[in-house]
Amino acid sequence: MNNLEKRTAVSLAAVYAVRMLGLFMILPVFTLYAESIPEITPFMIGLAIGIYGLTQAVLQIPLGLLSDKIGRKPVIAGGLLIFAVGSVVAALSNTIEMLIVGRAIQGSGAIAAATMALAADLTREEHRAKVMAAIGMTIGVSFGVAMVIGPIISEWAGLSGIFWVTTALAFTGILLILFVVPQPPTLHSHRDAGIMKDYLASALRDPTLIRMNIGVFILHMILSANFTVIPLLFRDTLGFTSVEHWKIYLPVLLISFILTIPLIIIAEKFHKIKPLFIASISALIIAQITMGLMTDTMLSLLLAFLFFFIGFNFLEAVQPSLVAKYSNVNNKGTAMGIFSTAQFLGIFAGGSLGGLVSSVWGIQGVLLFGALVAALWLLVALSLPQPKFYKSRIFKLNKNALLDPSKTAQLLEQVAGVKESALSLDEGVAYLKVDKNEFREEALRDFIA
Image: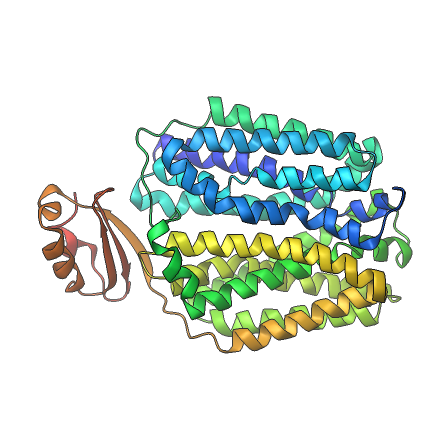
């Protein structure tokens, strides 16, 4: 990558990180602090945890499309400003209702789609995947950091302190967008990284993509529901005060991350993604049942928690890869946008249902509820087709190739190893899916710029 692309990757990853940190930091502590709020109920605790997912899901695609019209930076900066406003409302709230409003406003600053589109505007076709990967990795890193520093900040400054830190992070993101992230020379609708209105219907109807959307919905529903009760479990069963919870999260997340990396490599390199996908869902079921039935045994509880995050980390990493494999070259970006929307809806559903279930069946009920919905996901996942391990490639076309697009499309289909192709005249590029064992890049020398 050139210097501009490196700057883009680092600065946009930082923007994404400060926002996700702000959203994740309350997860390990909110349930504990919420007990002191007047007239609190488990359902309202869960709603406060998950409500940002609802507003995020509703606004993500519209704001992504808006960024095609008015520009990426205004949408991202505006979204971060809204996120800051929501953080201030939450920090100043003295009732659970106002805190829920603040969290809902936080989610209204839905910048994910616009951020990915900006990354695509600022990178050359051959390096776009690297920049997207760098931004995507920040989500996992932000989650791990938030699990550790959330309890520490809350001990130092209380729950409102977390929201004031979140406000500062939001303004840091605005400064990065305005003064560090490069300004794109032109705006394009990118089929691999953006949401295209023309392909929304086809992506929504695809039965395989529907199953992937159900999967990410359930995964994040379980995660969100778990965090309505797990902090209580660590305090009441293991005897850890809230500030000590990082002593559990840090080693568990580090060990699970280290153990997950080989699984991801095996899945992709040796084409074992589906069996490991099924095994990871099974790991979630076992972990949820173990946590639900052995809440009074420290070793079993900690091992189950570790087992959960090994499965979660693997599924979180490979699901976007599977969506890319199952989608066609025209609707990949749109499919990813819908997939992300389903993820945020899962966060909302998990928080709300977790609170509701815990009010009736307690901590054990929430954990066993997670096992039940994971079992339903397993049934859905078993019918997924075996994915094709084709590589997505994007090539800038030369002027001659663009003079007769229909002929160029026909000729590209005849190139050895090209399994799918689509031309974007607006961008002047060809989107391809290729079999790397058959495809030779020199076969495109008459087409590429």
